[in-house]
Image (cartoon, rainbow, N blue to C red; front, side, top):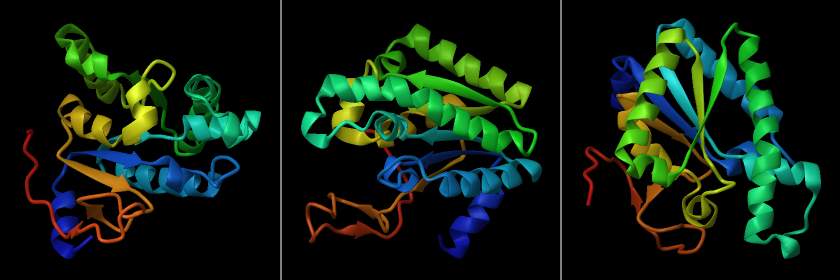
Length: 204
């Protein structure tokens, strides 16, 4: 992050942080050192008066660390079952890490349908408002057990962008193993162009 980006973050009251499963996972389960370091840094933000919500992937990876299902047997229904198994374990890890600093966590599982339905959208927004008023840390994941698209495509990136208005965040930080934002997946397309700076995001 350049100096202007860091300066902009200082003026933000509330930040949305997104961390992907590739950063969180060791390949055999959750990387507890990464989670502890993340929670250390985010707790320091809170200590300095910043509010944040955390979008965290990792439920499927954590579920598979428990169940050890070979990739060759990894059907969609198995992935959804692993998400159900792993989500509770993932939340316990975050809860224990933030508790060291005296902070309470809360779990929010969201589907695309929740955001498309106006009544459910407003209910979720009201819940976020109440959580921030109570001082609880919202930890958000797409509900992988019933949401098919997230497992196949986006790894919570689209979800994160869509909930920025819900949490009224002034900035979003994406923690990833990719060295920037690309116009295509650099793992599949070595010629993918990296975008050095995004000044504005507009819906299609």
